[in-house]
Image (cartoon, rainbow, N blue to C red; front, side):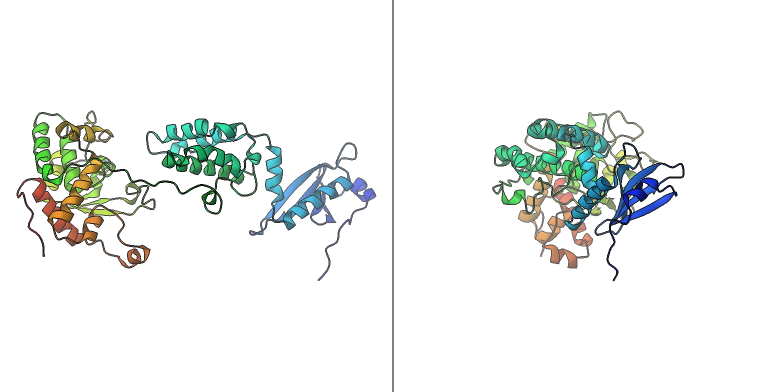
Length: 414
């Protein structure tokens, strides 16, 4: 195997060569002469891992005032050393060029570039709060200077007091610094990484579950009767939407954004698309089928005008006669609180779950699947291909009969 040759060009050649093209000096260094006679130095190498060819300009090779052959060789040697140490010269060069860019400057620009993808109304405000207020200690720091201790100084004071907020702040810092590295504005490990980094430096934070106010299931039939009465005196379908959410035990957002095309009246089935099933607990999201009881079907017929477009919202906002806008975010909550102040929309799911556990013999996993909760560990989920739709339909029909007051006690199932 031939040994790599270095220093192929003499000083005289470097100054006198005039033939257009690349003239190699060895070790990835080239003297480049353009068709018009322009002269410059170029360093070429293959990116580690991908094998992609990368080029770095080292400056002009003009006879007067340009980079000399000796200086070009010195720069090339520095790049070769970086490559041998596993570093990327192009990334480091770009980082040097933007060495003065502060975290605050880049974070603001990054937030501007991603805000179009936010879904929640408060998401942008939450990001701004974290990046402007909570990250104030590092906003004036150069991106390349931020280390794990700087991130720790932000997180430590609030880690045990407001852990959820602290975790969200850490995640956003990580995303900003990751984007900065992708743009070549910093190199090395991300100081906001959790595993193998901050996880070993911060105490285990409290992970308390939020308990939503729920009515005892014995009160639910009375709540539904009051919703019926309120609907008679209202000019919107918000009370019917609240009743539908109780009957189906779904999350409010899943019902608010339901479109006509998701309903199969023939099969009495509502299919919620995967993107609307994404939650903090289930970020991957999966399509969810909801069997509809007779009363739920009747509500849909009542609220959906004849010939409703497939993309139209089923439960339209108060001023959206064409069903192009959904019910407001808090409309259903206000309707429920009007008849039962201690109730929340999410609490309806808790009422259903308590009833299923106390008053029926349906297996626990059937009730959990009706709520679109994960059942079992990863191994069990891998083998559980079915959705137990038939059993879930029996459960939801029993719940519908109970909610509508057809019987105060649901017969226990064998």
